[in-house]
Image 1 (cartoon, helix red, strand yellow):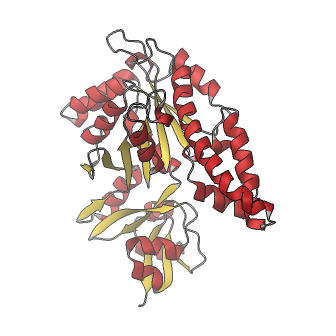
Image 2 (cartoon, rainbow, N blue to C red):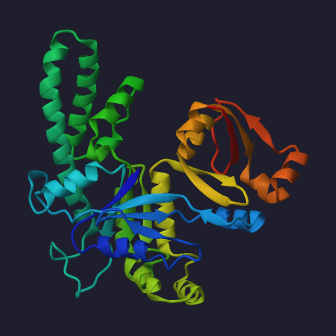
Image 3 (spheres, rainbow, N blue to C red):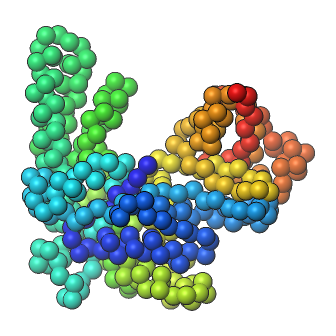
Length: 364
């Protein structure tokens, strides 16, 4: 699962990506590695891991991770191949969610591609290009499905009805994510269409250092603009985050953050928000060899969660032994949780909860 950073040129995308790559802003182990020139694997900050490490004292700790993709800046005409348009659209289609960076600061030394700072216009520029590309794909699909629908094919008629609604939405300069599937068939179709503007989005307002806590007028404008989009807005001073990563010690970084009025680096907030945007959650395994956070989709069953460790665990699943994170921390160990009746045995239908501490029994 990947979240792609998008935006116009010179809004702070690559600086943000580099902040995530530097990792020194974190007190916990926060590695980063490059799979391709523009993809980073970043640990998801989670204070629960520190507590589990403290209680279990394992030989090693493995955090959950999220893939962040730095995508080339988009310009007007990208939907028609202008600039790096085709590369941009190809990269973003491969991502599962969008982190849209908007410039919300004034600085005469940093040139804006359109001559002046206007995050509403910038957002609309990218939205329109993505909507135009989706509209092109929807109309191609409609050409094919219309013929089948006229013959009375029920599946084709269902697909046509959904495509017509999406087309109408896109023609109104609105994104496909506001089109709500009305049944399971439409949900499956919506997923199959792989529309760019149907992907969940997180807006990152890149502000000056003085606006890092409460934002500014630009941020207020964006919040008002996206209030009906079911999208989260995060305030981040990318320049300040870059300065934080240059500091050598954890103490220095904490002093810097306190001076800004922040409790933790904005990059940490962003990564957790991206994880949530991808509809991911965490369960833990905790033993003396390793304390590890495992990433699963929200709503995953116990066998599916076991399959993340190894496919054999899912195939031969017998049962899951589960302790809620809060109970594990409260009682301090698996043995004490058992004594207190907080150790549960769950079967194949169990829906894993975020923070469950789990052990699987299987037989292949």
